[in-house]
Image 1 (spheres, helix red, strand yellow):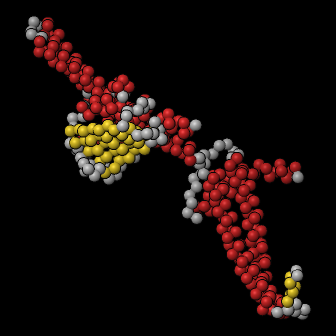
Image 2: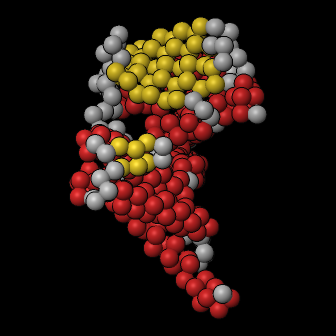
Image 3: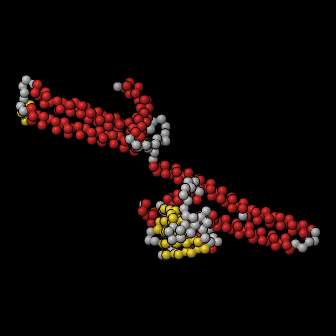
Length: 360
């Protein structure tokens, strides 16, 4: 027995993998695709458990089919066997008869019942086998969601870094370069006794523009007014600098959002304004903030071209914001707006203290 165990035990992981592959193939044949789990070492505990369950189910299935193959034909043939027997008497327990019609009336319905039980039993065993394969061999859904969210966050950071680099290049860097030229012109003017006033004005203008552009870039990353005065004041500042015909409405008492949720709401409004200007060609934007009992609703509607026919799947923009909203147990949806005729971006995010109590 020990020798048999020593010889057969090393083959158990390979048998488990083979049975796992066969289980996935059978499930795929029934329209259920099961992706393989990431491999962790030579011996996979889930595959071994799956192997044991499949062996037990195979044994039960074999017993069911053995009973079906042996007894169902026998029950159908029993009246004919009775007619050809010499004794011509049928005894089952306390019941006895010599009438072949009664024998057929007793055996054939029982054979039909056994046939139906065998069909449903086989169907149930197959379902249990596929369920075991799906539970034990498919990847962890939370792990899949975490990996997908991680990839999206990495893409979002990449896109955000490129956006900041582009804004710094197109804004402050140009003005600082011009400022350097102004200072060089001013130096030459001082050396040649020319009037430096024009060069000073240009230098002052470019310095002011560089500072304003840098403030706008910083405002898009982490607006100080959001932390000092709250979400509504930050939204008002965004609308002032948007250059669009804007209206806004706040309903309910402003609640103290945590920094992460407030920044998400702020970035949703900023992204909606950017999309309305650059992509939607909008002229009017309406922002609505509704402070509810357990969550805050932020809605941004415009009169532009409406939502795109093929939404972006990259990690930047709305996709990244949607992932961040999901991480905070919220939702972000881009819908057509009936009132203004353009697009409407809606964010709903719960208050973190309530959500944490629910999670606990």
